[in-house]
Amino acid sequence: MSDPLAPVSAPASASAQAPATQDENQLILERREKLKAIRQRQLDGHGVAFPNDFKPTHKAEELFAEYDAHSTEILAGMAVTAKVAGRMMLKRVMGKASFCTLQDASFGPSGGRIQIYVKGEDVGAELYALFKHWDLGDIVAAEGTVFKTKTGELSLHASSIRLLTKSLRPMPDKFHGINDQEVKYRQRYIDLMVDETARKRFVARSKAVSGLRDFMVQHGFLEVETPMLHPIPGGANAKPFVTHHNALDQQMFLRIAPELYLKRLIVGGFDRVFEINRNFRNEGISVRHNPEFTMMEFYAAYWNYQDLMSFTEALVRDAAIKAGDSLHLTYGGKAVDLEAPFERLTIHEAICKYTEAGEALEGGSGRKVDDATWLTNALRKLGMTEAKHHLSTRSLASLQVLYFEETVEEKLWNPTFICEHPVEISPLARASDTNPQVTERFELYITGREFGNGFSELNDAEDQAARFKAQVDAKDSGDDEAMHYDHDFVRALEHGMPPTGGCGIGIDRLMMLLTDSPSIRDIILFPALRREA
Image (cartoon, rainbow, N blue to C red; front, side, top):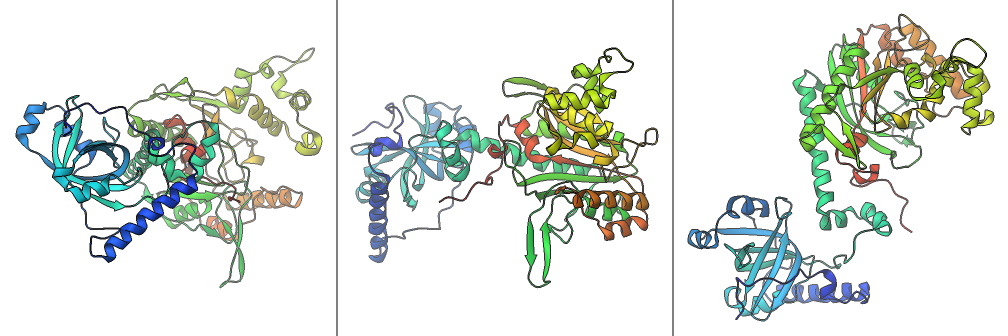
């Protein structure tokens, strides 16, 4: 007879049940035969193949939190009973007694795992014989007494054990390396099943998003829902997904941003609104971009872009605390400080601070950053062409933006607000009263990436109409990302919108930062992938 207090040998992997060289299809066939036998037992009146009447009383994390500090003797005297259930991750059969490990949805010191001691004379010889043929990956329930093994591992001595769900596919025996990365994304259920880090990452995301929602509500914002199907795409410069509504017999667009609808609500009389929303942009896929992504946009009457920057700074800090309890993060092995005040620079100031363009022109007056010819030549050296980027027809401000994007963005590691974008690339933002060529707009950069975009909203209906007209002209000239003319939005502004500030924050990129994830696919449960052949 096996000693329940004896040490358990090293955990058995999936490959311990079947040689790695064994064909997976053969393993699946064997499991289907086992399920066939289970179904036959049901027909013979011996239980249900997929029972649905088991109710766990404890999670592994709860058991460890409450009982792991107790000694073997104290636990024996307490005679604590528990009912647990989870996926069988480990199994070791030892004659008349065996060990298996179940994994549930909790975490704690064991990663949501609890060891089960299964003894034939306790659960019955017939059931024990069946248990020997259960596989890793099966969903198993156990009821019994909490105890500790001789090595001090908190375990459950089973008085009964049940198979709840038969797993037909074997657990992966290897799950690491670049070759497995697409499997992690495409079959996220496997990733979550075998990687505790992945589970924690998505729990952290959930907590952070919930925290953002709480933060907004606490500051007087009303959560709203706006359409995801738009008759006119608007609110951002982006290429939309196009669809067709059969009943209305009209072309529709998946939203690229909720902005214009949220500002309609400000016109209607709501002072503060926000939406945590899904946006869709028919553009490239990269470590930073997914065609379907999550943003939070918020608008506040009587705020300007300065107010927005202060609020956004507080919001990011709050999300970091709720996701990971710290304002001092590490991303890609490099420190990120969210505690220090976020730097605020204009595009012009950032170029001067981080590049040679802040130097004086050779043999002339002024600085390189203010000379269109110098910027054009510099951009050509960086690989830009006249045919693609139309350098010769761009304004000085537009050239500065291009130069900033190519040379400065990646250097903005700690949080930095970049302000005063040109009017021509900010069709919805209010122009500066002191410099009408730029807008009261900012972009938040952290780790060299844009995390948010906000501005004092344009509430001059006639100016907005003129900006939309300029966007239409740009679209007619071949700019696929230029905005459409939204007549209803102009009509709304004609009713009068109070001075307003609005901001959009990329939730996915923020979660990349808070969870130290190198790719946006790591923090989206089911990222966009090419369809399997």
